[in-house]
Length: 108
Image: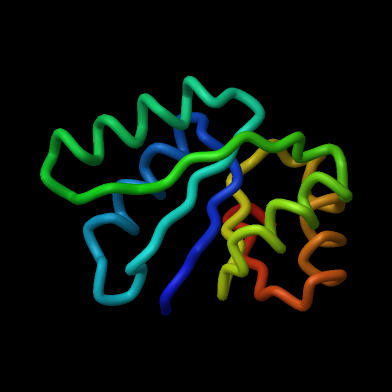
């Protein structure tokens, strides 16, 4: 899998991003996006410090379908992993449907 886009940079998001970074043969390019870019940077710095390589970060409003569509179109991921807040599931799913992108939700 070449490109994966993770949406959500909270506690679970940090664990998921680290696990993906440990499996580069599957997740060769990781983009982490959240409403709070500083949280993404903290996770990216931790991954780098642990010798797990680089990940890219970006900012997105996961409540806004158009913003999500633009983000997905920017990176063209094979998969979107949703670890955002539960009330954002429908907007992220809608963006994935519009862009024909595979979707994984860790909670639902």
